[in-house]
Amino acid sequence: MLFESRYVSGKAAGQVALDLALQRYPALVYGRNPAKGQLPPIFGFHSVRAEPFEALLRFLAENEYRTLSCDEYLDLQKNGVPPEATRSLLLTFDDGMGQVWSIAWPLLRKYGMHAVVFLIPGLIDDGEGVGPTLEDVWAGRSTLDEVESRDASESPLATWNEVRVMDESGVIDFQAHTLSHNLVFTDSQIRGYVHPKLVRSVHPNRLTMWEDRRSAYRVQPRLGLPVYAAAPRMSDSLHVPDDPELREVCTSFVVQNGGSRFFEADGWQEKLDRLVEEQRRKSMWKTRVESEPESSEQRCDAIRRDLEETKATIEAKIPGKTVKHLAYPWGIGSEDAVRISRELGYESNHWGRVAGRVANFQGGDPFLLARIGEDFVPLLRGRGRKTVWDVVRKKLRKNVGRWAT
Image (cartoon, rainbow, N blue to C red):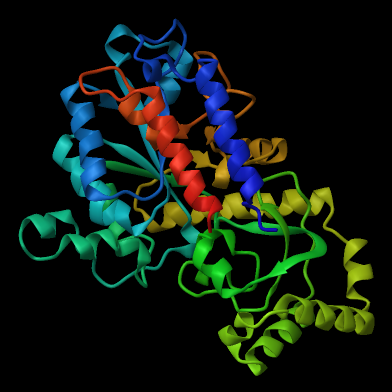
């Protein structure tokens, strides 16, 4: 159905367990000193809550870990890891969610740590003033609930005003996460329709394939929209455009038949299927679309426009900023995206698991940097470290919860 499915989630959890069992993760995760040539781990976060994130930073501080910048990481990859850098790591945040401002930034400052945040500049608002942070909670000016609920507010992403304040502090370096974190449809076979349960259970950035992508984090997609197979824009998949007329027919039908109440009755999907079949007989859109996906050249042009505008927008919004590092949404890119990013002046690409690796090594390709999940931070060497099985159990609980929705 959508890009994220139960199969994909289960497959990812199984791959994590296999990689752990075969000891493919950075040596620090197993409580050992890094092997010669192995680089410090790169950890990927999205949102954080105050208590667990502070516990992670306290663990790092008490065990004398040092946080790196992307530039420092590339220097280690090129020149090797000196003994004093063995207890180092790179903390990254994807998307630039509001909790980076309200929670992560004040805690990083408190513990003398640094992080890199990969922004989605096409979705960021200028904002009026700045929102409250944990520092306001500590001073009695705000509540913990208010700062922890930032991601669910009408301003779920950090604003440009907040980004500039964080950048000026030197605590966070802001880099690129593509222009709009976009997915594209990859065929014209309808896999389902947008319905209330789907909207509640799927992250907004997985519903960015229709119309105004800027509103993806604030405005729910219209009920009844046809859903097709999709893939990240940075992947090697070709975009197959959907039928805008069919969108209007389906969503209007839902509105005319009770809106969200339409989905409470049995047989709603069959009704929409019959409507689609009738509409396609009239327009013959299905036949046209299946024969007209974008070309490889058009795909590369779209990737180039995206990465070019991403870089230009961030550099225009943050005084003195040079954007050199790119993280792929969902950790998925392509050879063309790597080539184009290099041509545009990017110096590194961050993935998830890449080229069969979850660790990075001296002399490796800076455009194929592997990152691992935030769950693994407590496994690092030091007093109070967790066990591998603590992480496995946590991931399994997370996936069981996802599959139950």
